[in-house]
Image (cartoon, rainbow, N blue to C red):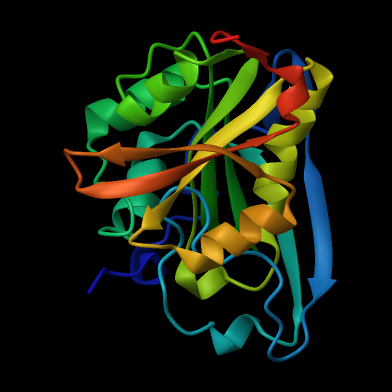
Length: 233
């Protein structure tokens, strides 16, 4: 059973060098105060290709005010910690790969609740050169898009809209530059919560892909597909 990040989650103060979110010369910082009612299921369970860890909500966060902030993610240790706590729902991430992703991302953000890191997202351009069969599926067929490589929300932080917030930041960058947003979700075995989340967010199926390496199938998704250019006619 995957370990949870809550037992060893880093704080913003511990993540030395963290800055407000910087994207292509723009500096943005968002702070949201929200009260979630008991039993609320806002946000996503199982988002991105593999999704968030499954488990009960942290009762200490429910039915009280929380401070949700999104800022730039620069520390590979934070990315590794959040990512690897979600294995096997996501693929393991080592330090060299984490560093590569942050160095080549067009956007890499972390979300915090009351100063505690609770979720991450990494998005890449079509020219980043990511060594991934899932990424190549899109680059072989389209141009003019942003690729969401991974988005993970810790189990204890679900129900506070983190996944939606993280995705909205990527979508804002894509809209600013006239780009589509591309990603994928496991469909065999199915990740029903993630599929439902992406449908609510306006993502549409553009194909499927089977990975012989992983023995799994993903559904390929895009939002604002009309902004992308097809390479196949």
